[in-house]
Image (tube, rainbow, N blue to C red):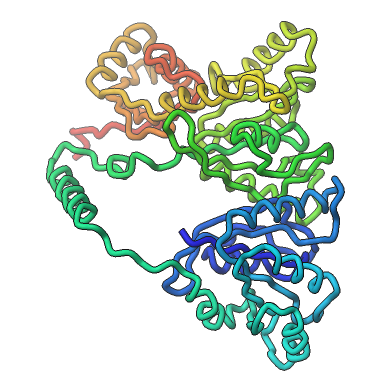
Amino acid sequence: MFTLALVGRPNVGKSTLFNRLAGKKLAIVDDTPGITRDWRSAEGWLFDAQMRIIDTAGLEESFDESIQGRMRQQTEQALTHADAVVFIIDGRAGLTPLDEHFAQWLRKQKKSVILAVNKGENERAIAACLGEAYSLGLGEPIAISAEHGTGMEELYHAIAPLLPAEEEDSEQENEEKENLDDTIDDLEGQENYEFQQDDIDPDKPLKIAIVGRPNVGKSTLLNAIVKEHRVMTGPEAGITRDAVSVDWNYEERKFRLVDTAGMRRRAKVTDNIEKMSVDDALRAIRLAQIVILVIDANQILDKQDLQIAEHIINEGRALILAVNKWDSIKNRDEKLEELAYKCETSLAQLKDIPYQTISALNGKNITKLLDRALNVYEVWNKRIKTAGLNRWLAKMESQNPAPLISGRSNRLKYITQIKTRPPTFALWVSRPDKLPDSHKRFIINGLRRDYDIPGVPVRLLVRKSKNPFTD
């Protein structure tokens, strides 16, 4: 797919244009310069042209190991994946020496460059900048407004000659499409066939979000998994701001890994940018299938870790604990006992939470962590047949019937699994309003034990049985 990178100084509107082309608010946008630090990509459209867009960090003239220097390295890495570049300058601020410096640098990159003068809601206000932009030697500048969507047609006409020619489908591809359509029609015609998207799209990537407190090693873990310096890392807390997704393959399975910003206690989050970063991380949890909660082995499951874990459980996601910095721990048996105790007492609603001790910095036990992710994904998708469930329910009721109501039994009549991801069961009861929470926990714990459903949320919906003598 044709890939277009958006580059320029900080705060010229790269992320705003990225969101417009992607058709959704993926990147955090604010007037504060330097919000974007890692490059991120997404599929987008400019009229009828489909492309992959790359949003990059603001270019600054810094070559050391400071945050600005590392941001520049990230942008340089992003350009290696691009077919063309849109170089954006701020029309209100006018042409700056930094723009001239990076224009000269871009001319050496052997990439097709389109020059865009942003914030041009009023062309008269940026007329002087448009005239100065010719001196950059990057061709005719295009006046755009990423926020208001003006100038997009001119941008399209500048990009169109660079797009690859469309190839007609081969006869074999057309035949395969027809066979697939016929198969889908046959399956949909079967009365007992439950049609799911996964049946026709088995290569859909497994979405894994990496979350945790600031500075526990989330970005280092993502880099260790993909075995490249894909996102910025460093000793400073709060480096990551945007949730950055990376596509990757493991064991012939597609993964989409999402690195998120560190989540501090809500009372400590006062900065507007940090609030948006936390909202982005919460959105990543909601859209994920598996969530890896990275915790510091030196601070096993502190209060904030537990709050994040509870949020993951309430969202119904499959949870894995990655106990990072394990190489720095000496009393390992004591730490494992502390982990087991805190999981049992503070996260009692989720039995047998899977965990893996790792060292993201040294790349230790990374494959074991991914194997656990695949195992818990299978459990999260588990489906149990209704006939066996109701025999099991009768056995459970004979062992421990529900409490009596005014001397009469409150019968548990029928149970079935109504969905997976997470496993969710519906239980029909004579008087659901009189069924105590303790008995619901008894049923859920029995399902976990007898049907081997460890480490994932299990939901039980209690419903009222219909009385045939009501009328």
